[in-house]
Length: 217
Image (cartoon, rainbow, N blue to C red; front, side, top):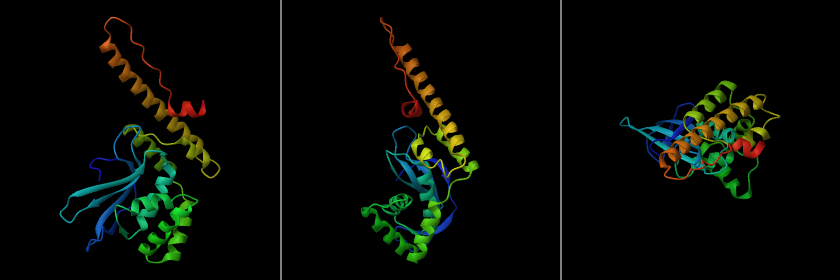
């Protein structure tokens, strides 16, 4: 469980059973990251409003890759699940948000289909969500939150979706600016640290390349 995740976007609030509890609680699914920083787990999570008014957060994600669209689709799938087991359901939904299931992942479709209550309807729901994209407004908000939270996502996923996502080029441009600004801030911090530590020899500050520069330039 994470106390202070970075939340990129949130889904709709609904009441769900959590970890086998007897009463439904208010649950908000979200796309996010466990903590700020480049090398943190990125994926999906839930905010749970307890009966006593307290909020708890759970996040499940991968260190790599950081897939923004897949995580958003996983969040939309999680919105529809009536009961959540925090050790499993978040992971299942993230893998089910991929277009192709590996043999080892088919069991997630079975388990969450049973949890949904109507297996065939769940399969249809998943197929529908796989054709969905965030709106341009949502994507713009996500890019802003990523910049503020020091979060990096993999642009290759956007490139792959380019034919189906009309705003792909604009998203890539926005993510490139976010990534370059992150690199500038990091370089400035390192330069300031180097300037403070100069003794007798000039200290060379390494030049950083952004994630986009490494892959696309």
